Image (cartoon, rainbow, N blue to C red):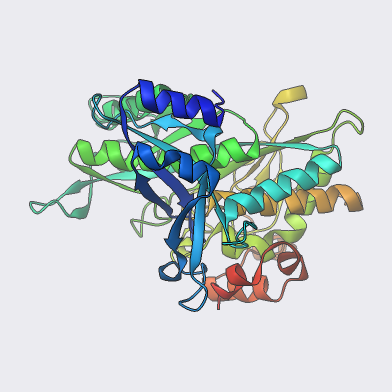
Length: 401
């Protein structure tokens, strides 16, 4: 549901709202927020709420640290796990400089810019996320352990799958917030779960990805558990992926999906530092269905990009390399720019790889490029990339150095 500023003001006044969280995302993909009381809401809408950006990597230093948050009324959500009396609501916020200009490191604004560029070219992008996470037990002091909540396998059911009730609570909480999951189930790893979402526009999809992580961690903690989204929590078990289903539509030019995929494949090595931003991201590649090689196919899950069966509005491509440590705003923005590059240049797809790359001999694998093998290599490729420099500001690039 979309709201205007006046409707938000009325809702806060009439529905016993006591706290308002102004949320934003730092460069690394962590959600941050400032809480204000209802009496400050009009000031937030009119002038913004100031904060010190110098304590956040990529947000400046002590010499230039004054930033402001401007809540987006469209994103108003009640946090259902907070008290019913004295409600707490949350709105995502734009980060600005004191003179009103967008702060260059505001990744949500960067995604909005990518969407605007795609609209100028008559293209609309859509994303659907698949996020994986582990549930671990807590120790006697309430600290996370690496002891899985269960030892169930792929799509098992109760009693082996102890996470079923947790996933149900997560999905019902999301539904209360207006976010409708598509499916949920147990994954291959012990205590590993996946919840998938329907397609939506890029901004909504990224906002929902951020909300999802907060809800999962909150519900897990309420049940005495720890939700781990890291790429490789257990060294000998499957890692966590953030599979991104993507599509592009145009009323004028027909089906651009092949050009979009070609652009993503062409730029993926340069984007990897932002799709896989921590060192453990690279321990996940090349095993348990996580890709290593730059390739595409149909329903083959050993490929970097697969195109599941579907037609019309259901035609999509799945990018399988990103992991949940990625900032979804940056990830979606770069995918849009790479896709538009492929569309503008009318890039041809490389030859389809209809084989299992996990079992292919070396002479076959040598025909394919590889994703970076380490975070250091990925960062070097990003910093040397004219494509990345064209779309990301210096404050974000400096965070890679």
